[in-house]
Structures are given as C-alpha cells and as structure tokens.
Length: 348
Ligand SMILES: Cc1cc2nc3c(=O)[nH]c(=O)nc-3n(C[C@H](O)[C@H](O)[C@H](O)COP(=O)(O)OP(=O)(O)OC[C@H]3O[C@@H](n4cnc5c(N)ncnc54)[C@H](O)[C@@H]3O)c2cc1C
Image 1: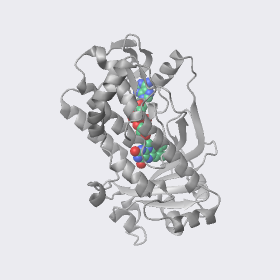
Image 2 (image 1 turned 90 degrees about the vertical axis):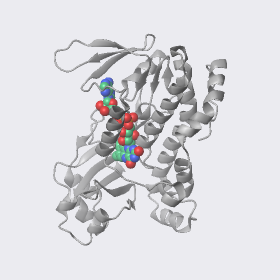
Image 3 (image 1 turned 90 degrees about the horizontal axis):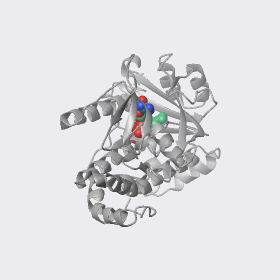
C-alpha cells in the first residue's frame, strides 16, 4: 500500500479517529462545538434549525449561513428535505446484522496462537456461508477489533443505534468457524457484544436544499463491506471545504453546494453499490463457486472487492481535494447556467 499509493493502510478505533477530527477542528480556531443538543426541526427557507438543549432549556432557533447535516442514517434533515418533495423517508433493512466486538490483549494470556493478531498490522477476513468476520488490531495492538456480518434474525431493534447482543447467540451463529475464532469469540466479555442492524437508503435524487446539504450516512448510508462509510463521509467534508472556500458571496452558497453534490454523488453511489455487490459474493451459499472464484482470480481483480486492486485504485489513487479544485470552475459555471440539470459525471 505504501509503495503503490504512498500511504500505509492503517486501522483505527473509531473513538481515536473522532478524537483526531475534534482536535483538528479545535486547532483550526474557527470551530466551536456545542455538545448535548438535539436538532428537532429545520427551516430550509431561512437557513435555521431548532435545537433542544440539555435540561430545562426551551427549544430555540439557531440562524446559520449554511447548514451541513451530518446526522447519520436516521437523518432528520434528510427526512425534512424529502418531506418538501412530498416523499416519505424510508430507511431500508438489508437483512444483515453485525456484531461489533473487541478482545483485549490482556485477556489472551499471550496465547501463541492468538498473539499474531495483536502484534501484526494485517487485517483478516474469515468467510462462511451467509456470514463473514473482518478483524484487525487497533489501539497500538492492545485490542483486536472484530466486526461480523450475518443474517439479521430481528433480535436488534431498528430504532436503537446499537443494542447489546447475546454472546451465546453470537457463538451459535459462528459455531462452525475455525478454532482460533472460537477462542477469540469466547474471550469477549459478557455484556460487550454490540449488535447493529445494517440499514441503507435508496439513492437520493438530491442532497441539497437551499443553503443546506447532507453529508455522510445521512445521504449515502452503505453496507460496511468495503469499509468506506466513514471514509466517504470524510471525503465529502474535504470536498465541502474546497467548494465553500471558493465563493466570496453568501448568495453563491447554494451553487457551491450543488457543485459538491455533482462531484460527490457519482463516487458515493459507486461505493455504496460496490459494498452491496461485495456482500453477494462473500455471502453466497455456493461455497464451491465462491472458492473457485477466489482460486481463479488474477492479482488485479479479487472476488472480495475490499482487496481488489481495481477497487483500491479507484479508492486510493483519488485525491478529493485536488479533484474538486480541478473541477470547480467548470461545474460552478454549469450550475449557475443550468441550476436544475442532472449531475454531470465528474471524474471519480
Ligand atoms: C458494522 C459497521 C462497520 C463499519 N466499518 C467501517 C469501516 O471499517 N470503515 C469506514 O469508513 N466506515 C465503516 N462503517 C461506517 C461508518 O460507521 C459510518 O459510515 C460513519 O459513522 C458515518 O458517519 P456520519 O458522521 O455520517 O454519521 P454517524 O457516525 O452516524 O454520526 C451521526 C451523528 O449525528 C448525531 N445525530 C443524529 N440525529 C441528530 C439530531 N437530530 N440532533 C443532533 N445530533 C444528531 C448522532 O448522535 C451521531 O453522533 C461501519 C459501519 C458499521 C455499522
């Protein structure tokens, strides 16, 4: 990865990534965080939103120049945008669920069979019929992070972010996986099995309403099978950073946001589709066909899209800030001339 793309492939705890983003925002000197607030209503005509704060405080309207709604797969901003078009917002079940679990190095008692998982830099994928596990060390090798996918048996409530799953159900689900997996799963502390329902949304026709835009899972929630949900959300942010820095009048905010959508949508549509395709290949019932596909694949193209060279090239040879810089003037002029034209294919 370092040789081909210039950077190592790193795996990181999501809390660690979030801390870096918070630190970067704080160091910019222009970001103020207001934590513990819940947005209950949007007024896109006047670029404002209603916030209910902690405790007894009355809900209040907050006036903005631009609204960037990064409120996740259950986005209230998306619901409000679709409502203006008379469309009911519906998140789709994928029929898949995930356990998110971690094993601490202190728990393995330096077991030589498990130690390499903590001391290397590799990621691992174990594949079985209708199920897989992806795992990698994080936190400087103190933790081995494991994320599974299996058919959703509806024991996860759709309206919670995560639920505590049953360890015995998890063990049952992966009972036929290899002995090292059995050891690892048994070491997960009772009560630390998180279960997520994997949900997506039909591709949206539009991410922008007046001076408000959706980013991340709010507009392109995805299955996690090429590990691109957060990555694409961060690319969205980089693109927004460039387009908003290009304009000199608040009157151009909507046009800048339209440019953002035209640049980002083709790429995120591709990433969402590739992740969905990958689950078909990985989770097939036809073990022999799957194994034959792996055995006959050439180095450039792998049935597991997550390690396919073609997919890597598309993901890692792309510099979103540079591409936005390059495309901005032409797309901005086009948006100004034809504000409601369908998105032109930008380079992805
Ligand atoms: C099992 C699994 C594995 C994954 N693995 C990877 C991976 O390896 N790599 C990768 O890149 N991505 C991965 N992802 C995807 C990644 O987690 C998401 O794409 C990413 O978190 C999306 O970020 P976001 O900021 O758009 O939304 P979120 O992370 O969902 O954040 C939304 C935030 O908005 C807040 N919010 C919601 N509504 C309101 C409101 N009304 N008012 C105020 N706040 C509100 C929420 O509390 C939350 O903090 C994985 C996802 C799953 C489920």
